[in-house]
Length: 90
Ligand SMILES: [Cu+2]
Image 1 (cartoon, rainbow, N blue to C red):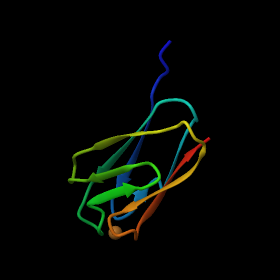
Image 2 (image 1 turned 60 degrees about the vertical axis):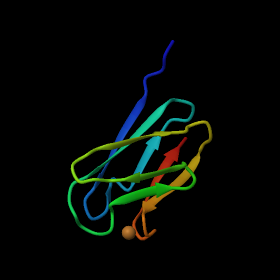
Image 3 (image 1 turned 180 degrees about the vertical axis):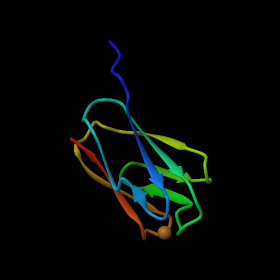
Image 4 (image 1 turned 90 degrees about the vertical axis):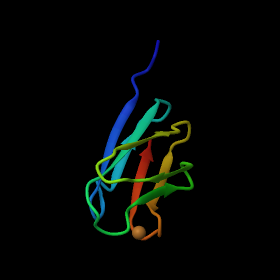
C-alpha cells in the first residue's frame, strides 16, 4: 500500500504564512514555498536540520521533500537567518 503524501504550502510574502507547518511522523511529506512578492530578504529559504536550500523566484512554487523519520521541531529561515519558520513532525 502506498501512503498518501502529506502536502503543505508556505506563502512567502514579507514573512512566512503559516509560520509553522505540521506533518505526521513516518508519512511522506512535501513542503512547497510560494513567494509572492519582493518584500524582505526572502529570495532564499534554507534549513540545516531538514537539509534543504532553495532559491525562491517570485510566483514559482518550489517543493522540497521533508524527512519524517524523526519527530521534532525543525527550523527554516531566510538566507540571512532573519525570518524564521518551523516544521513540526509528530
Ligand atoms: Cu532574511
